[in-house]
Image (cartoon, rainbow, N blue to C red; front, side, top):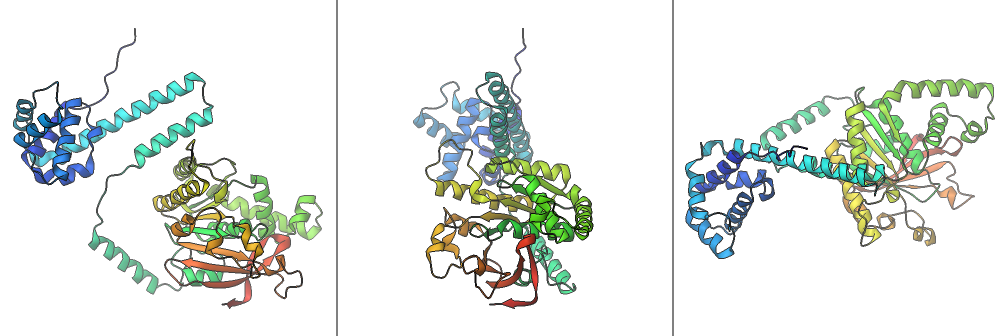
Length: 448
């Protein structure tokens, strides 16, 4: 016969937190920031904490008398005589000064109980055969993230943060480079952004065949070249398979015609270039995390990003191609706009958590094709205005030759910075080499 395992909890710590609150109401702010009623195991303790919380929120002192009065009016504590029990709690508190330590114990036991519940749920789902292994894994990963991702609010040390900022300013002042973030490989963008900044959500949008993936790969290759050696780059390609990505990287690095690469129609010089390009990829392969799973939810992406960071190193850059292919893990979503809004917010949260720029490639509405001037703007972002709201930096790609075969700007791409939360906007002109699907700096930069 299996032995029943009692869920972990500390009766003494729970009692000491409640007793300490009644003895010193001023400790409420710390306690409320650390734990909730659901962190208590004993039902009477849950109810007592709820009463204290209600009284505190209504600016009512909470002691033996006010708590007993409220409990009687609310009809709770049917299993315990509240007044003598609360009195015992107050008498048995070892020290109110240690209430923070008691809170930590209560919280730790609560997390252990929740982990046990998640483990049981994982076992139940797996044994029932009602869901696939990937569905079970995604559900459990979501529950684990919600558990570990829920951090108590902590106020920022203003003095320490100010000193850290001043140190950065001093370092930038003494540096020969104006780039304070990650070098993206396009000088005009670097000039306006000072590089791709940590914790920024960057949206790179364009109509099909404008070069979204190619510019994303340009940023990736630049990051692999310029980021610290202990930093990685994560690329989640929902649209293209891994092999197609490697083809493009070889074409870009070797300056080889992509079509010729795919067909094997190479001359001797191409083989030399291909060998050098392959060697460059080999040099960075341990720092390049490539994932081509077609079905990604925000929870699954976050879990993958965390695992990759633990296994390969903290990311200098994360790129997702592309945003509209992601799907919420919720079975029912009121509208696609709300779903995209949820995904967009999750990508911004990921950027803050990982403290690196996150680039989300994005589609544009078809309406842009119906205008005389087909240069995109923020209103063209497909399916949600939340993308514009969440993004710190929005980049659009426009190549006139896609619409005007006789364009004088053949081989020229306009990269339009339509939103820059921390700097100027404007248009950068870059060279686009279609045969190599490659973006390069113009010999003489041109800005508008």
